[in-house]
Image (cartoon, helix red, strand yellow):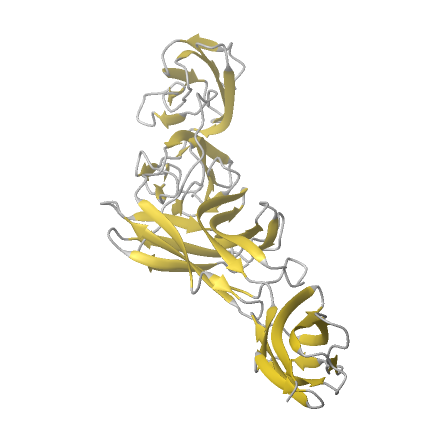
Length: 438
């Protein structure tokens, strides 16, 4: 398996978080072997001070794994004398807090192989990269060397190596387990780490190239992040499905389109680390939206909200950080008539030119008709009006209306109403015709 690691220096990013109330207890412990102690027996010191809880821990119960009775203490520190061979034991610690809640940790202890590790920073925040270093681990037996360093980060993820890095997406306490793989057994120690709320030093904004669009436009959106804090922020996306992405909702809040992958999507193992410097702004996400829904069908005209999000595939969560509302205008057309007023002598005719112009990318056929408001008997007569077709290449078209009179046509002023209909859209304009005796 190949894991691609990509480090990117960005200018501004931060992580909003979920906050938790008081947490349940987490049992954790380390140990040290007294290899310099004089036999008989093996002396091992245990440290349960790494256990944590939202309430105070009131008791520690140790099962040392050698058949001796469990020992209950109020102190997290204890020492046990083992009888020697086989020099490995499954040790179990159960802690209880003042609320009566308990938790248990069970780890293999090898007298001659002691896992040790540190982590920095000791008080990380959500999205901040934490470095775990197990280089102080030791095997006192040269015939049983350490073969591998395995890590469990407490959030469902794991790592391998003497030194590893990890970031957390949720505010909580986590138990980190280090296991050393050897031929004689796999010894473990655990510590707890509390991840706090991220510093509110990053401001996000969604930027679009326009506020109003016609249906043929592509909406170009980007997510900007500005670091207004005094410290850099670093976090890690651990697969190709995670990152800065977008959701689009309609005016009722229903999801129309997103580039966020669904749960359990196949994701390449690409590790991308972002280091964000203070006082800078960077575009961290971009989207070209063709005004289609998730099924690829065009969306109707209306208002749409573009939401920038931070997405993590594992554990699956999508965090909105900024939004902007845009408007998609409905396709339309416009009618004009020239001349708008005409004088016709009895027995003659006049021609009106009708121009149809597409608005907001309208395409299609416009059917036209004319009617006359009768002021007297024997009004002028109107010819049929030919329909026109508008296309993207030819968004304007003209046609004509002939107004005819005879000697029997009554004189006076008439209003001609010209109506164009395309699909569900209809518009009407008027022209004035004055019939005279001469």
